[in-house]
Image 1 (cartoon, rainbow, N blue to C red):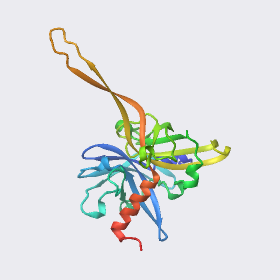
Image 2: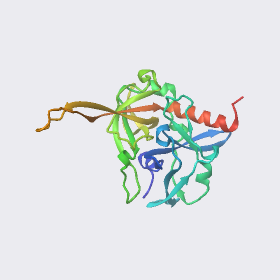
Image 3: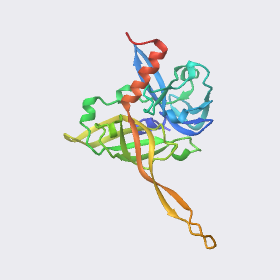
Image 4: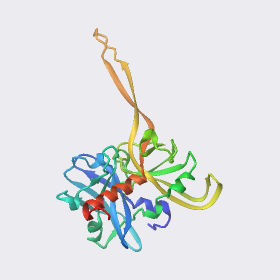
Length: 270
C-alpha cells in the first residue's frame, strides 16, 4: 500500500491500545524540543486507568510502505516512571501521554506515522474556523477494526459547538458523529484536500489540523414499565440511546500534558 495522502498517513498514526481492562485508541504525536523530536503516545486517562499492562500494535514495513496486516505487538508493563502514562495535571482533563522514543527506536522495521506539532492550529487559525467544520475521527469504535489488514475505522462528523469556545467552561468542544466506547483516545482532525470553505470564503489547497482528542460519548436514558401477565408489580427498566455526540478535549490539553510529563522528567523549565 502506498501511503501518500494526508488521509492515508493518519491511518498509521493511530494504534489499537489494549490494556488488561479495556480497548481504546491512541495516536502518535511528536514534540520538538532542543532540536530533538520527542514522540508520545496520546490517549485518555480513563483508557489506561488502573491498567497493569498496555499493548499496542505496529505495522512492519519500510521505505516502500507498510505490509498490511503484518503487525507486531508492543507490550509495556508500567514499572517506574519510564513506562508510565502521565495524566494532565487537571484531574478533570481526560488526557494521558506516554513517551515512546525508546520503544520506536528499538526496531528499524516498523512503519508508523506521527501527528506533528505543525498540525496544531494556532489561536488565530482556531478563530478563523467556522462554527460547523467537517471532521474525521480514525480509531477503533466498539473495538472494531479491519482485522485482516489491521487498519482502523474512520468516522466522519461535524463540530457541534464552536472549537473557539470552551464547552461548559471546559477546554473542550462537542462533535456530531457516531462515536462509541473504543473510540476513546482518537484524534479529531480537519482534513481538507482541494476546496474548502473558511470564514474568509472558499479556499483552494490542503488543510490538516489536529483539533483535539475524543473522550466521551453522550447517551440518553429512557425509563419505562415492563408488564408481567401474572405479576402485580411493575418494575422499571431503562434503555440507553446514543445521541451521536462526543466530547473532545482540545489540542492545547495535549500540549499541557506533554509539558507536564517533560517537567517531571527534566524538572521545571527555568
